[in-house]
Length: 261
Image 1 (cartoon, rainbow, N blue to C red):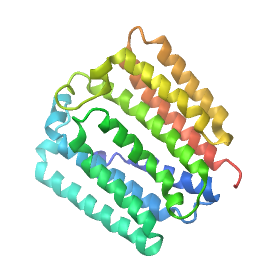
Image 2: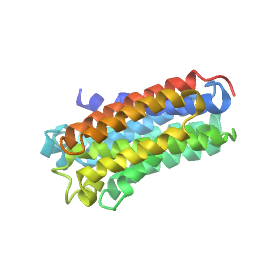
Image 3: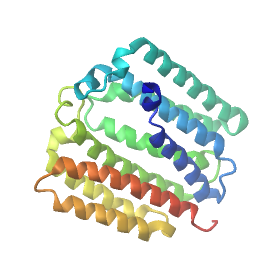
């Protein structure tokens, strides 16, 4: 059961959905998106497992000890997933496009190096955001040059970056000395303000069919943040993570509900 939980399938499936979103937005069809979407799900799962392996000792401080207690089997599990990720990425080149294969391999490489950047200022969250949003660029790599993809990519990047900052609140007591976070640099209250600023920037970048619904959800999140800046920052950050996830699903639904380009 611990191996299944380490895959973080709900989050990884969301990454696959972003791939489908990119094709729907640029092409109006997801017919050629299934292989890239599958590869993205596997790469995302590989990254989650590898991060758990690299953080196995640190995670014991918060009661997560499966990777530590099963170190060698967990390592074999992670290496197997990376092998499958690389093989599937190359399969994209054989069956679809080598440019898309290069993008998939780039996402794979980013997942591998993430754990080595945890002490570099600003890099960990930025790397997660830039990489996690990149599945929407597969249509661009396939030759579908739609400017909306770049705007959508930027919007998703900012939203994920905001979520990553909120996620760091979970480990605010154990991260100092192990991972550089914005919370350590500017404090919890200012970090919440930065989250608000990032979310404000998301709204004008979204595709027109779902701007109104997404703006409403994001504004409710920002209002919630503003009312709890004087206390309860941890609870507020947890609420924000869930709200961003809900908003992301609404944005995805909006893309699939949009008319053909």
